[in-house]
Length: 108
Length: 114
Image (cartoon, rainbow over all chains, first blue to last red; front, top):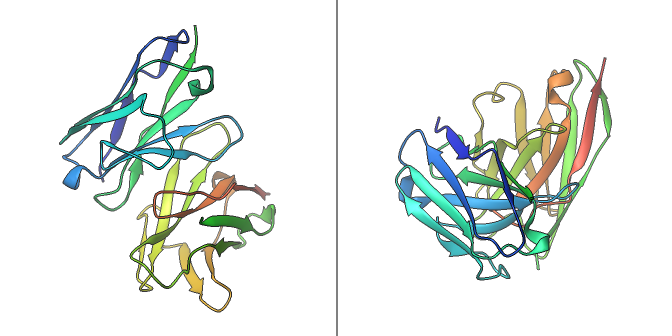
């Protein structure tokens, strides 16, 4: 099973700042099958990025994903008020599909 | 636009079977090269992948739950379902059905009572 580790656990930033979230895998993620989700309180997760770097439909271009192998990054170029949420990475290249524990981005 | 809606009992007794259904609109459960998945989230915790059924009918389950899980499809109703046997308090969670990677259903809270 591929274990995903996310850092930091909490990121405290102000609107307009840049957020950099890390997701590290215990083994190489097959074919860059790495996704990022955003979850707000009381809501289902929403897909932001798939295939490590492809934005999902309707996702603003301030969200970008990068990385390969075991190291992946989600970057939010300029935080908007609606971006404060929990972010999860997921690998779907190897069964069982697994999620990271999440990074909470909160308002400083 | 694909939409999913979970339904089923919100309270299940320990040792019994949790049964949930996901009703799909905007796509057919038996066409396309997509996964129909169940994912759960205990209150205040992270996400756990339960398993999926492929459009062809093949299934893949999380080994941690494999002995207790069944995911099936009802093509006549365009639904897919989750059954989890012998539940305990640790199975209390919001259960989501998911089309491929997205969209997700709104989720349904299932509480296991002793």
